[in-house]
Image (cartoon, rainbow, N blue to C red; front, side):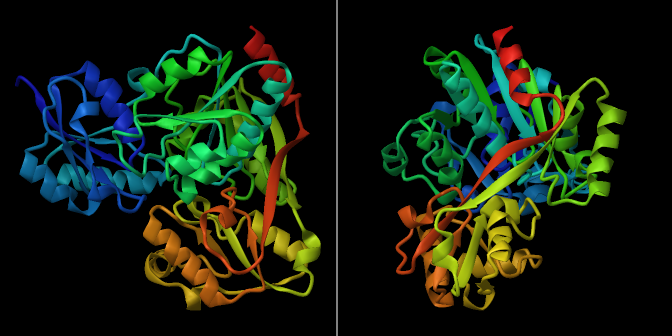
Length: 438
């Protein structure tokens, strides 16, 4: 057999990176299509041939993952690659079984085949689940390195929800950059906190080019991962965040367990909000499967910008979208802040419209909380319409995206911010300093 017809299962992130690394180096493996899951509207686009490796003269179609068995037959695919994250081990094997029942082989690529090599020191921060508190830790490290005088380039896990060709390499250093790129709510949640502290963020589709350009402006590369994916760039220091509110997930989700087993430092986060028994479960797992890793404990310090504005008010809580949806959490920092301030929380579900209503149907564990979904202009309008229909006195915005900048709202918005702080263990920032210096 001279070659293989392949399908790549993805969510507009890891799938494109694997295509531009592993498949570039193995042209005998021909990608016939991508499938899409988790992120809405991706299957309405194509991967542009101008970004593809040599030999691809036409755009590559993207189909809904639900069509996978039929796609295997249509394209005669022999190999199907799983290239996205935050899946339980049981979900992964159900997908493998669907692929094999259709007649193809099921493939998982590893770091050796997909990680890029940098010329600068690389610190990676990933997590075992979405919503574990990875980004606050990454932001704390970025501020620490900048205070040392290091030029830091933050490489964010891809979020190309617009025109893929235009988003091949993205550089964000000002809020105006976000406006010019028409960034979604989800992108703003990840980029704005860095920009507010003077750090440049890089993202896009082609991470080989992204890394090359970012290294020209930096002394240190900081990888801020997405979901529970492993880093696209080989790290010199790997920090992996485990969630004390979800003990055991570090060994039950893909590829979070891969990252956990590869960690130089395990950060057990949210320890003050969790039962100590849950913390001990994670500590025991770390000792069993990654005994050489340094283990530290941390928490998220929650602050409300204008707490007096909440007194006696009916409050609608908006939380980080992916944390609540495929991350599986029922609440976040906004819910905790509302509880701590004793406010009445409005239930958004009876007022939800369009894709927001469908999200509540898809994720029935969500109750008195609104996920900050805004993957398109239409969805942002539906989010704003849902908020207006709920008629709260105040919106308590715990998404890092500054909703009042992207939504047309006629009610006050109070920001909830959260920052990482270490609780126990060896000095984490000193470990980062020592490794970067080396």
